[in-house]
Length: 509
Image 1 (cartoon, rainbow, N blue to C red):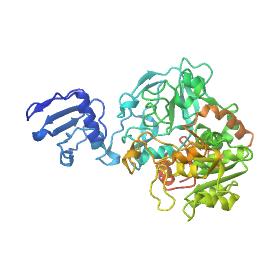
Image 2: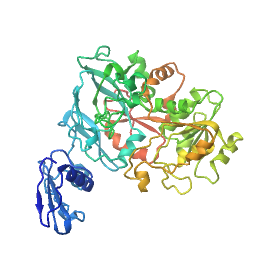
Image 3: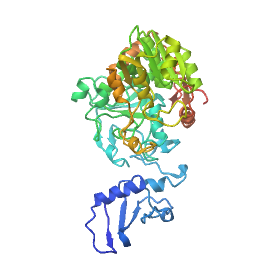
């Protein structure tokens, strides 16, 4: 906080540093918006009375709801605790620039709530210095970038982790969306090869193309695009503060390096339901199969029949797998897997997973196991969350010397986890079992650029019908909140948003 005062009501205590008080404020409220004025008083018995105010009045006082210890917010407070205390529709959009009626986007407003709102029209720059998430604050010019008119942008299971409140993201700030396909409408002065009018796929990884990681092909962990850690993405918490693409327009940095231009625009629009999946889930599913070394004679188990799991299963077929078995607890998703030739296992039924595999193949193990579920995994019998369930399942059913691919998302921090260890990303894995089998395990987000061009060719030359495999449903931007709701309830569909109606494929949700 920029200005604080300390009122002593008890014997003098050691000086309290502003940074420490600000950390305490964030711990109490969830976060504190940059620019607030915090006031701290030390009460009898050493308790702290902390109040915060911002210039934008909210008209609410939360002193009566203050946690024990004297936390009281003034009527003009705009911090996380106060903003989430107001009705969703009353919250102010906190994106870094002034909302513009010529651009709208899908904004995370709070757990289980997203809204379509006016947002800033993109510029060839990034300014996330007003982010309530300190790790993603940065400011830079992006003359190497391009502004895209979004043709399609997809709802991803990774977005759902944020929308369910399983990350540190406060509501009312983040424009969601990292799966983007669009037409270039403006380029920066440093762009050499991309031109206005180009129809392009946007990898969800943001990469500079210049750092050691990018030069060796590890674009998922670029070293120059996120001040907090390696790797960045659009519209995702702790991933650099880049504005998401579930919007009418979006800015893409390092355009020459990041964008995959479709060589024939009209032909690409004819296959846009398939090509829209190149930004994330098709390469991610394929990456999981490659990690697990799937080949022409492989027997494969894919855990999870969500869109990534279905894309992975289809990728296993593309790689020539002999038998692909998909496990899930939702019958509609298992039916979707069967629609393109997969064997299926309903994990809710009684019996060990190995026995269920043996009923299909005659063997209780597989050559390759792929985790397409991630940290929100649930137990097969009681449905309770068990973050390491799928990891342990994969180690139990992979053969000796087999391979495990893990494209499913695991996080460093999970505030919504059931136990304290899992909140810090510490999971109860049977690692010794995997070690005893000499199993190989491969993790991490997909480096999309390693795969998107060859997978584009596979689509264009009809080697795979990936949109049919994952059951793409094209919806309008206004229907995005309903798409999120249906997806969270287990719909066997991949929702693709068409913000401008350019595909002529939109249907009611």
